[in-house]
Length: 302
Image (cartoon, rainbow, N blue to C red; front, side, top):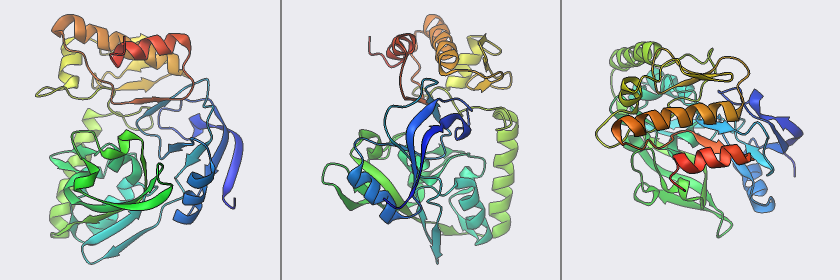
């Protein structure tokens, strides 16, 4: 294989949470061809993008890991943007603004990549990635070939897409945006950044974004705030004082610290409101017995 590979790669360097042990081998493809070759030849590799909504085990990852951050090419033709899975979404939002194209304003403050945004149907401020999505190329792990998926085939829903079923790996995606005056787009982006400034911790405080999904017709942040979890700590992890649905890594937190703290938050809301919050953050890697039990509880596997 031609692409860069690093053995015993320390994953916490790569995550927005600054938490994570080592992967035995990490591969860094730069093209669709390299990515496809890896997917054809590696057995059950784990695909990681910008690692902004994952909690990676402090014990590390047994599988080979493919990190897509170098797959960062995109193309703009008229109103259509085609972007590889590793393109960072704030940069793409700025590019759309520069070209007076609307639809990506909500992504200006996101730390993630296109692959992650499509995977979880990222949304904010009444916009979602599915609004502008037209089609994508994905690797079909079952058929071992590249396929094209249209919007209907993606099964987009709140924080959800067909990619979460595990059969398809996104390679690149095509979006159709709307021509709107640059001033209007810039004003929306400015508002969105201001909102995030007060409602979400900056990445100078390592975090993984929202910890729990919003339950139907309610807000996880509101429930957690009312349950009084702000400022709660476990080890090096703390519930952010500015918003109760964020955990920040204040002092070399481990994946167990975060898992324990999430479990406290989950239990407080369950006891007070009989609502079982669903984690938005995904746990990746080797679980200790303690972590296994904590996550089984939060994912209702017990």
